[in-house]
Every structure is written in C-alpha cells, then in structure tokens.
Image 1: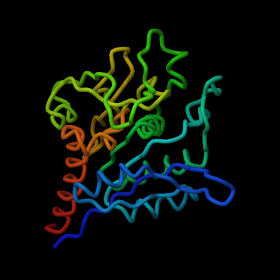
Image 2: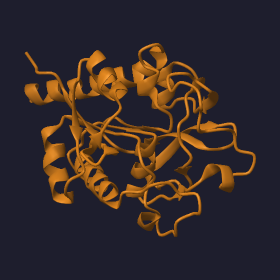
Image 3: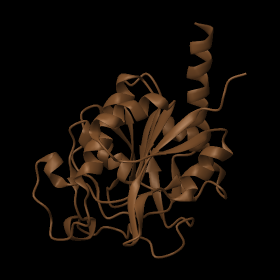
Image 4: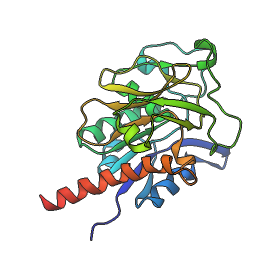
Length: 247
C-alpha cells in the first residue's frame, strides 16, 4: 500500500509579539491537502541550501501566499506602495522551485506563489496594481476570504479549463501585486477583466505545474471547482508514485 503523498507548503512569516514569531501557513492549505488524500508539511525559510533537502523530502510542492517579493530579484527598484518583503524567503523559494523542477515534482503556485514562480523563470511583476494599472478592478477583497468577488476568463483547451470544467469562473482575490512580463516558459491561461494575469501553466513541464493568482484553498471546502485543483494536483503525485513503484 502506498503512503500518502507528502505535500510541502512554503511558509510565510508571522509576528504576534516578541515571544511568539515564526513560520506561518494559513490552515486552509493544510485542510485542502488533507481532504484530498495528501499529507501536508510546512517548509520554513531557514537557509537556501536546506531548501534542496526539504524538497527532496516531499512528493510535491505548494508555493503559498504571503509577503511581497523583493524587486531586486527582477531588476527593479521598490515602488512607493510595495509591502513588506523578506529576501531570505524569496531566495529559499527560488531554490525550492529550482529543485522541484530538477526532480520533476508537481508544483501548485498560489497567489504570491505564481509571482515567485514567474520571477524564478525570468519574468517580472507589477508591484502595485491600484497605482500601476489603469481602470483595474479591486483585487484586495474586504469580505471573507472564502467568498468569490470577481470573474476570470480561462483559456479553452488549457489544463485549468479541464480541471475547472468551464472557461469563466468566479474567484476570491487577496493581492496587490501580479505578473507583469511573463516568463518565456510560462503560458497565460486565465485573466481578469482588467487584463491582470490570473493563471499560468508551463509550456513543456512533464508534470503538473499550475499557478493561480487567487486562493483556491480558501474556497475548496464549499466550491467543488476549486477543490478539483487540489484533487488533480494530488492525483498527479499518486500517479507519479505508482509509476515509480512499477518501474
């Protein structure tokens, strides 16, 4: 009997007080993984070299949400409205992405995750949508994070469309940064009405690799379309593990 797939989730940083601080991942990530047969573990940003060993412990990786990305990584100066950045986290996650792709592991990149994925592969970011994108819709919702707030259009014949089962859907939105110049290796497969990139897929990766700008983990418990993203992600891990056993 095969063990449950181990899904590593990259950690953000939280500070509660001078006695309580450390790695943080919203519980919706863990719940969505567990509900679909995976075993979630959190990957802290400690040292760049440790990232390689952490990825090697996992069967797949989720790049989670969190802080803004340091613009030094895509050759830009900081915008006036940039939020908190943690360069160590950025560098660790670049190593996580590099190692996961070297070892052909499934990758699901969520919110900040789609952004760091794009940067890792040579793309750039919009640092602040409200001040840099004309006539943008509201991408930082003030209602419950599990509620959908705007539409996205999904490219026909994309993997995402096959998973969701439609080419237009509603999503939640908790970001003020987004992809600007898309990395050459990535294909845009979803956008919002204002042109913001909402999802990407890799053009040639031999395994599951999907980036979404919204937070499907916070919709998955009540929205089957969003849960399918996790179901297909973890299914890809199980298929890979089964193939390895039978080789």
